[in-house]
Image (cartoon, rainbow over all chains, first blue to last red; front, side):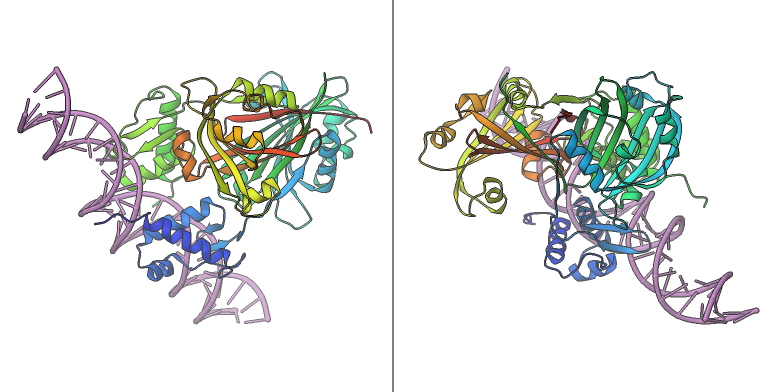
Length: 243
Length: 243
DNA sequence: ATAATTAATTTGTCCGGACAACTTGATCGC
DNA sequence: GCGATCAAGTTGTCCGGACAAATTAATTAT
């Protein structure tokens, strides 16, 4: 049998993608069911599911057991945040809406200890929330904030935070931030965050870890942000400086 | 039938992951074949393949038709590049080894035109290469460099580049770089780059797009870098500045 | 001893089937 | 009209099988 240029499932995935891009299936609508795809393309359910798996991986569709397959993106939409200074970062924080979902005190595990430069087991305040552009919009980021728990006012106020806050940093009067250290890497969405972001677990995301230091060089808080998918772009400029 | 806490394939994947992490299967060695996993766990080949798909997605293993399943990572290894200035960027370029694999002149497509701020169809010099820490090491990055083709010396010299170069920017005496614009986002490895990076296609990667401007604000070259996996960390600090 | 050929092994692709789990819609009882 | 229950629809998980494609090992020929 002469080889085909690519697997059947890939061809079907490509055709479905084109259909979505051309507007045959709009965002928010349901794709044909697995059985309908089988009939339309004359393929088995396994092959149909492989094709849909490709589109799921590409984050164009989202599949829900019992509900069907929904189109969640039809074109490459990128939202771009230009952050080159602490001011940019704070402005970005002020322009987006952070909803705190949970607040707790926990003992630091390995990762948190490394992040906060403390011993494993140290008691830490942990806030968990999601960030969105506007109220009611789907979140584009999940955020975990950590601070070594102490008897200081800031730790106590962090524990009291709930609901929607805009400029968390300003809200809490953290004090003058002297420097922010950032680590940016690709990551995969943990299962526990996938649901609140409306993305498949293990799907691609951008992870930005920030550690906020005061002007005296003391670590105030650390935050881990997960931006699902490939749309979120972190932009900044490097200037040539003479030393 | 009472529900199990998680799917069989996930349990098997977790067990295999633990075996890898504990050293039962070391990096570079082969995992048991699909049939052996079926027999060991009393599962079907479909379920075994699903389990292996999970580990593939986590980039712990790599599967080759006819060869078997090789362990490529057993623990979380992160390599961290701190780049906060043009100097850092150039130093980073100098400290790593760029191997040019292809050089060509092509008409700019939509993406390239947007990158270089020129019309679609404009003739562009394109260099394709991979970057590694040391000679002989597996590449950790794939790089595509673009410049609007002209009769200028730089365009001609770009076309002549081949083999291994270290500091491409220095090599070509691009001239004083005044500014570098950077866009960082999560992405997925295109199929055509997966092989040379030794990773599965569509797997997670960090995409860093840089546009180099001279001191007069003129765009010199643009580069798109893909860092596969979640290990590559781009670090930089933001300083508080008074306005 | 070496090269070519063949066989075996292994993963990739595709098929069909069955049942679980979840969601949605229809029907019945109050 | 509303709530509870049931049926239908849909995706998720698991099974078994077959053949293709790629790689490796064994065998054969020189």
